[in-house]
Length: 338
Length: 67
Ligand SMILES: [Zn+2]
Image 1 (cartoon, rainbow over the protein chains, first blue to last red):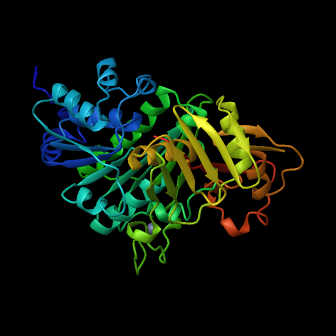
Image 2 (tube, rainbow over the protein chains, first blue to last red; image 1 turned 180 degrees about the horizontal axis):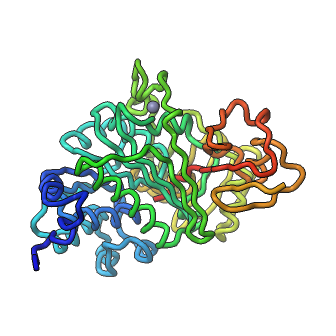
Image 3 (tube, rainbow over the protein chains, first blue to last red; image 1 turned 45 degrees about the horizontal axis):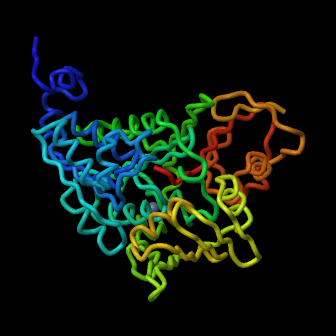
């Protein structure tokens, strides 16, 4: 009996020894080291993917431990950046592969350098804007991008292959005005595992040269419901990202969400680059359900959130009081607005 | 009427007549949704024209941003 590390995976005919050799040479970027990112990265590293890069802007908190499988109480106590805590744990899991953790707020100006030299990108971001930024860079550099997202007990996935399938921008033509996030409606661990199971399966197929179907899939693991749509017909020849005259709009500076520290006020202003009207009433309602003290008037919603005071305006602009760290302010914004 | 939605049999109220009504019924207006009606993807600009009938097979996937 073969007892080598990857023997069980090599016995699986669609991968085999040849597929395993391909995995060893593969370089995969995981965008986000939250629930999806830690789950996917652990599977990739155990599977023997030769190089895994993880990028994340946040640090480990108590509320992460329920589902973010690479982290421990010690990481919370040490306030370790997720990218570093993930790297440390993954190096214990498999010392034969290279792991790079990068602490970075991914945006349109740094994403190109980040994606280069990778064969595949796994999506584990927590907001639409980052996904559309990564999608632009993935299409521009011809790198497959496996989309995945989840909230509550619901999740979805789609494997984007540049030049073959529609891109994410073909499917999402604007930033949604209303959104649910893990910080507003919660999330359970099993849906995370289901989404990453599909994402990593797509990744293994793509990296070992197996065929994939361009299906958008969704699941509600609590309701035991699932859906699948072949979205080939949605490939848009005029798409600004993957169409015949691409402009990669999410990489353009003027379209990016800007975060600026307001002088002497321990406050960061977040301003969406693309028009993004939010419903103040619905937002106020959700924040009240979270137990936050909320003030609503026709122009803004003001509330408390953890140690911060937040003010949201109708045009998507927000003030985050209680921090002068733009990365932290962006993270809070995305946790509420998505 | 009864339709097959995401693989499950669901009973819809009389008020649901077209794809737009279906989105409202499930409180998905203003969200990003892709709908397949009897194996064909529904054109977003025609949601009010696309009527829904008893026995239709609908796949409906809404986008979420968490991760
Ligand atoms: Zn496209």
